[in-house]
Length: 196
Image (cartoon, rainbow, N blue to C red; front, top):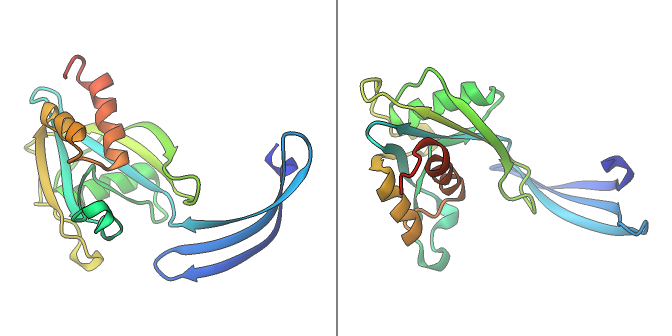
C-alpha cells in the first residue's frame, strides 16, 4: 500500500502563477525496508484529454499545428508542433471536455467519442493524467472553422492528412509530440489495419 511506503513531511508552494509548482519533502520506505528522506518538485496543471479524429474511408486524420513556447528554441525547434487536439479538463468530465475542445480547435463536431486509455505523460515531475480518445469525423459536421480561442492565446491551424503521410511525418520527426505519436500508432494498429 502506498501509505505504508510514503510519509509526507512538508509541502511548499514554489509558484502559483501559470500552474502550481510544489516542493514536497517525504520519507520513502525502500524495498529492503529502510527509510530514505527525499524531496521532489511537482508541477500540477490539472488533468487533460486528447483526441484523434479519423475518417476510415478517406484514410485520413485531423491534426492541428500551434506554437508551443516550451518547445521553442529546444535543439533549434521553431516551437510549432503538429498535435492531436487536446486540452485541460477544467472541472468537466474527460468526454465533455474533449468534445468541446475538438470543436474549438478544429471546427468539427463529434457526437460520440471512444476512450481508449489514460496515461501519465511525464510522471517524474508532472501530475497530469491524460485521457486518450478517438472519434470518426464527418466532413459535413464542421459548423465552425476551428482555430482555438484567441482569448487563451490560441492561433491554431487545422490539418487534414492521409494517415500514411502522418506516419511518414512521425518517422521524419516533423510530428514529435508524444500524445500525438501514441494516438497515430494506435490508429495504425487498431483503426486502419495494414494501413502502413
